Image 1: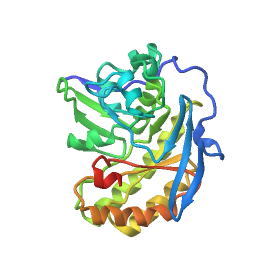
Image 2 (image 1 turned 45 degrees about the vertical axis):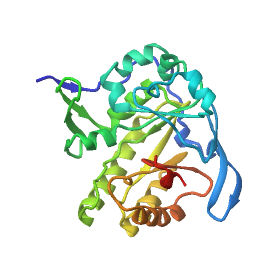
Image 3 (image 1 turned 45 degrees about the horizontal axis):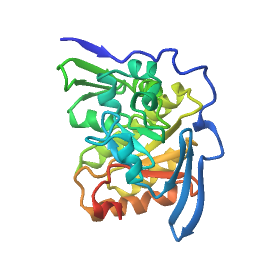
Image 4 (image 1 turned 90 degrees about the vertical axis):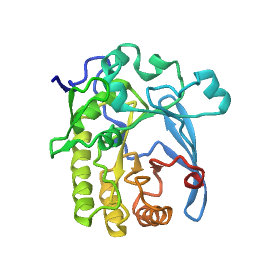
Length: 274
């Protein structure tokens, strides 16, 4: 049995520089509001993204059956790629040598990479404070993925937005389990921040808390205190009814900075998008 530990990033990313996460000025500009609803523009290294926006999923950096010209014709502004799959095949080091995801795919507009947390969750990993241990879906080898590993891989991939590694809990779950995952996610986010170096990549934290309204609000408040340029709202679309999902959103939105962008993770159905 092979044990694969994701190595530290190489030298293909250029010199270290202050990250977008440390900027007090958010790359998000609000253009109009109506109550809590907002329209705006997210300004990233590879272009501007109008919001609200729906990101098509390119699991292995491309949307299945479509090329970049198709995505352009459809009006896509930003593509979501999958850290877990890309780090195992073809490997982030190879993608880095090819000019990152944009050079690898030929897509010139912004891209976002997830942390790998959702895919790891679906593989029933062994979790500890250090990180996650799971079996590769490709060859059955043992993979060790820590918050630092996820961050370094995403820096090699070179997406415009990277997500901090989080612990996802299936719902329903005991409150103690949800709180423990929320606390660990906050600690893992601090570890991700400590190794994030790319000045052309925004690092987003992820709000957890399940559908517990108090935990949602607490998670949002403490994640916001990390002063990141944007925030993902995670831990939803994992089995909860739409009513509970909406209530969880209502609980955490007031705790997030009004001037920064929010990314509701996992939504893809028509009702959820609306």
